[in-house]
Length: 340
Image (cartoon, one colour):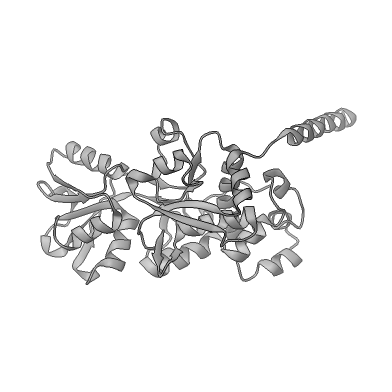
């Protein structure tokens, strides 16, 4: 039996090596390597996720793009950003204007099929909510019948809003504005009674853009599931693999306790086989992805693990605790597929 298993393993290994030898890099991987940077589509202005201050982009979604650049090119700064509205984002990805869409985009069946996109994972679990001025005198979304509601077009938010009010037997007046910063400004200027978007977006708008955040409240109802994550084009499997495992590497690094501060020590001294594989001490994962064996080390040393990115961009700036975005070991939903 032992000889049979050994023989079978040898055949499997030979088959894998033959398959690997025939694998060619995809169109996007070749293009990125040739031009030396990644073109990343992000939100026009959403503090905590993608926002430019003084020409410098920052946020959770921005960090993911920088991490992909670190993995592929060894340099987290080898990224150029394209600010996209909700209506522009899918066309920009489909046409090749951007290589990756990392713009608080909900993973849905229709987008995953009819739009020709592939989602590489979820980097933020969210849900749609409602924000009002406290002096409006309401405490529940069920009291909003007849309200004027600011919403961005071309989003799941717009559909969820209509579905929710129809289900509740209520009416509303939509105030449809395309650009995130413009719809936020319209709400704070009093052009509508209510602002609806992902709860994280409401917190971002209130904490960053409101003259007096204490004047506003986010109502308790969350009316949808919004798993947000990066997307690439259908048929772009090699690039999708890199994006997917970049996100997983950031989450797995947090699980192992590997940070941007201790990554060198962990690489040099850890006896954990999982850490050794992730950081390239034991080679193989980089070769499987078609990139350098230091890919995950570069991500963590230059960008940080998922928890570090969340803390800097979401907790410190927006005051949002981890909640369902905590690691699965801490009661959340963040769970990396095994990086091995």
